Length: 208
Image 1 (tube, rainbow, N blue to C red):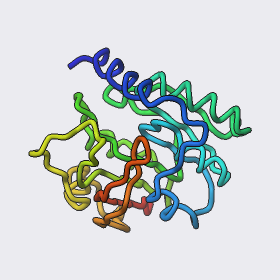
Image 2 (image 1 turned 90 degrees about the horizontal axis):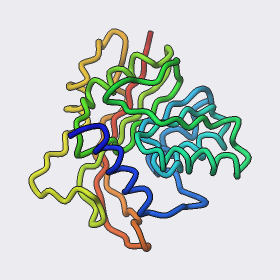
Image 3 (image 1 turned 30 degrees about the horizontal axis):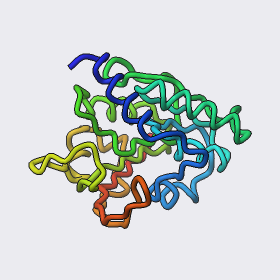
């Protein structure tokens, strides 16, 4: 499928959700990053913007990218309305075609799943190379489908964190896996609906 199809799909997903004035950050972000010193962060697939806004409130300088112009424009407006416009740069970016420039202390990829062509391993490898020494790449993937998920394929395989790390194929002399966990939590979806879901958590630190 074409990039045009992907853009139309994700613009439709976010337009259907409506505008959230105070999108919440992912729980796996706050528990992992809360004690890290702030620096430069990159949010891959920023979506509603809850992670980017939370990071900015913790004094991170955030570059937030998404393929959806709807998502990016909403986040830019939200950042300005919350007085965080100087800390959040929201940019439309197609990760299948290119990767944002710069070096970062933290790169987040939360639920970076799509029904369209995306070489995730290449994207995450580029992310690892964009880390400064001591910087971290946090990858959180679905390990199960919530009832409200766009993907209800019963035959889908959810790669484990170790599988994802192996697919990225990083040199262990330069990067180390700090976490590779499978955890469950109660998630809240549209309309306040709740369900138990599984998260696959991979945290990689660049050592040199």
